[in-house]
Image 1 (tube, rainbow, N blue to C red):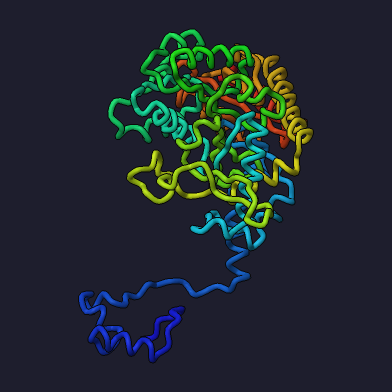
Image 2: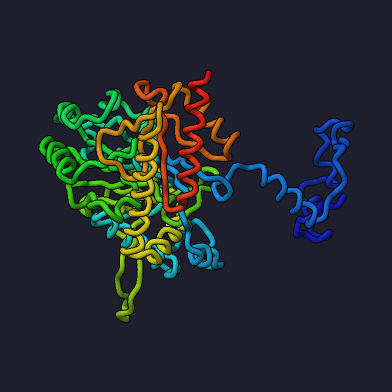
Length: 459
């Protein structure tokens, strides 16, 4: 019996069989009953590559994807324009891997790419150091919890976290810490964000205060409000952690300017497609004094023995990479390809481009909110300024039914059902716009919502 695609010659196979004391390959399968060794699979006849491609293309057209349907769903993953240069660069053969070589100093191109990404993230967030390796926004936030606990040497084990931090991020952080004795999360059982309530929970056992800005409901908190929270956290010796929406930083003051110690984000919006849920990119930036407590990879710029510019992995202890039992975190898979996409995106957009994308997202959201606010049966319920997402109370209170109506009748991908995560927001939908939503898309959604409300009244 010949085994296809195995790069051994007949002579090599015969030598291996002699070495282990069998005459032929079939002898290796004696433990399998003879009648079960080669069952008839009843497979259809094979197709040519052309036929397979045509069939798969037809199957893919059944998907309700963002390029073909107006989409108003955000809640952590966003449909944004990706400049063509992003895919062109990350598809180059020297970059097309997600991993760092185990001897990284010989891979100067990759190290420079990482250095540029980390530098851009520091510029964006206003922080001193950024790393690379985290899987997504959720794991980045969980790693922020771990860093805060390590900074406190696990002598502080309380994590105060806002209820308007992304519910999935909060769930992942709890999953990370469920095997660590004594760690407790408090604050996110409140029905809404209240700075004074969060401050009242801070004490000498608090390792970190975590908030999101803009938060999961799209609301934006002023630098003054954020600075007050930072000051309250620092007054008891805790770290102030801020999860951000990176595109919003094209307009909003970066967290580094209002007291953040650690900044995390979902980097998918920075040149990475939604991709049915991944792979994504966990953005993680922090104050330099905490670098030795950081997981992931930090790249620095230096010069070699001859004075030439070079790049090295730096600041973090080797335990973070090779001695799991002594590492403060065991996260290791390097999403460098996604980070490279983010670096190319940020470099291509530049300061003005980022501002323009943020402004388009903001103005389109407010245009949509204004129009929905004029419809009978709907109300926009945000209590604070919002960026590009906002909360709408829907007539009838059944968001799933509304979303089915939008898809079946109008081919529109609706918003996020907040009732899945917040008992006080049942019957409320989170709607989102980006630069990809056209004026026609917005008008069509408003017409569809009005149509739905009319049907609710008729029933």
